[in-house]
Length: 506
Image 1 (cartoon, rainbow, N blue to C red):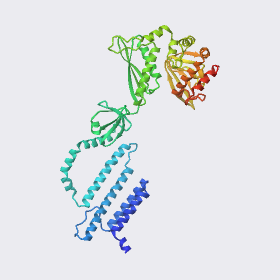
Image 2: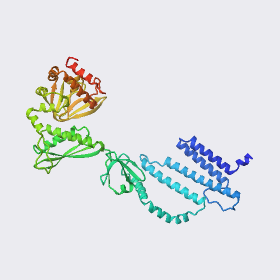
Image 3: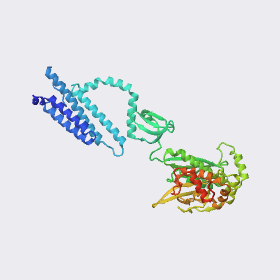
Image 4: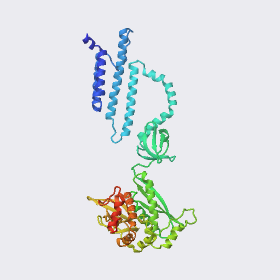
């Protein structure tokens, strides 16, 4: 009885399906190549079983008399053919997923895979209709023409988006992560693309969903292609109080001293126009990616002001203005009361913001002026400075040498300063300080600051507080082992200042 039962094709078919499903879904679940081999083995075994019992899965079943046994056999035969076609489609799909790969082009590979898989499933479905249900495919396609027209009209917008998505994916004008700008001034970073739409994340962190059909008809500017770097141009108007080549040199120093922009390709300065009111210049440079635009522009504008002031240049008003706006009265009054460069430099340094007017006057009267030619080494790495040095004009580079490598930490512009670590805490310089252009500096030495600290010891607490904030904000310039960088306690900095200047501790 059991032998006769096992010889039944329905029982054999069920056993084969259960065994194949168990092996494919559980034993070889996490092995793609193993699952493919298992599916091929199951498909071959199923084909052999059906052919052995006289069932040809790829041909329509012959007409038979309607009896109890033949009805059961016809149902089984139809079901077996459906399983055979579905499994055959799965085998082909597994082949496509495993072997249809475009190296370094995952999106194109996925698109091609989806298209081929869709064709495979459509072919399997039509084959099941023809071989299992004996429906003529030609007649079916012809009779369904009206329905297809109605469906196509109803899905016109969706189909347009789908085919536009295929065209955009094949043409690949952008990739996920690229920053794009559209004709209607919509811009953002591409975060997702699919068959229906493209998702952009705008600068205000809003999600913009654009249908592919609309995207295919508009002009797209990819700011991240051919590489991530992005070009920026800034126009500057300077009063024509000196020769244009001098103004160009000052603007070159602006670009040289900027830490945010790329040094390669080299930024450029071009005179755009000149008239009786202004020399208009165009500053062109590149940044690492478009997200750095705001930071780069802010730094460039700040440097334009500082270099122009250091070079004796004045910014011109708008082209339609009759005259430039006058300087603020407070600045003019201060300049008249405290003439001279040293006092103006001190007044713009946050480190000495807590000093009184008399204390600033004392420091200004004892500051020493120094000049350095281009490429001159001002301070060697790991040497201690006993004076705070303020950059009056020019550009200074701070470079650290580590294991045969030279790392540029920062560049300093007019108004920046260095040496405060050595002066106030006895620390050594983290890198070699070199003049990139002709540089003028003013120094405040120990002999100048010591009398003020002895007259007012509370100044050490004020300097310690300001130094702590500077260390936290510019950690890369205070990486020596004898300075506490991560959350430097104000008390410890104050104690070091008092100890270095031999002040009485509280």
